[in-house]
Length: 333
Image 1 (cartoon, rainbow, N blue to C red):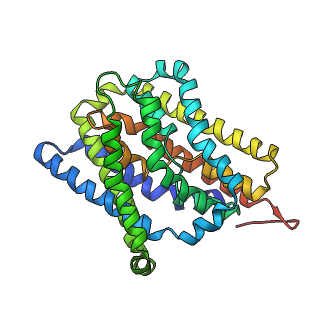
Image 2: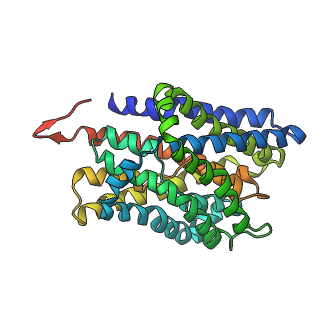
Image 3: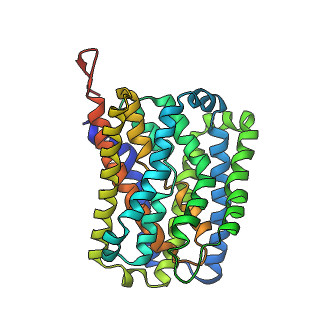
């Protein structure tokens, strides 16, 4: 029951909506002037999303969590060092099974920060170090606003063939569309946070709604450019396997490395969930900024698949961790 409960909470509803957007874009893609207006509306939704995230984040939680620097350094190394190394190392092996653009999407996954909500939620279900997870996941997203564009320039810019990533323009766009609203949210936290607590559905609607808008707009553009004529069933299958292989290597590696370095079980859980996950919530808005002029639908398809795989795997793993003995008694939830 733990497994099914975890999956229903963190997978079913949003996944259904996500794939409904892909289906909707496949059947009725937005085009022309409507597409331009839709993109502007999406930009506003993204800015609002990061404003609310800034208002939600507690400065006290950040300060409290920073003291566990060894754990955070380990998680950041996994997120921003191990993943990119794996992405580059496996390129000669995996890219022949995909298109070059799809493998750029794999590399993009590898330079993204960790998730926030689901990392904390799964850590809580698994009875890990929730305070450290809150701090690490939040800091990962803040640092990701700066590190991801840099890593895109280093590892992906050289891979792009015809239309290059404009790193300077992308950096300014991220500052104005993501960082500025986030900072404003922090500054307005005393007034906005009580409203968030009173109306939590507001954050959920903006959070998930902005992602769904980006997915619909991106796939509409991709459908107009012939996405499903370029991506066959065998390529989708290969892409799913590749995402699963990378996730499995990272999760197994983090598990054994955390034990070898002497972290306790609670910290191990935090490391595994925060260090192995990649954000869809921040990844899609940043892709929209970083890859202007590129086939965005093809680039984000690996991220969408990876997101679903990590939710399923983490849901199962969290339920397994939750059953471990506590004071000699096996916990059943």
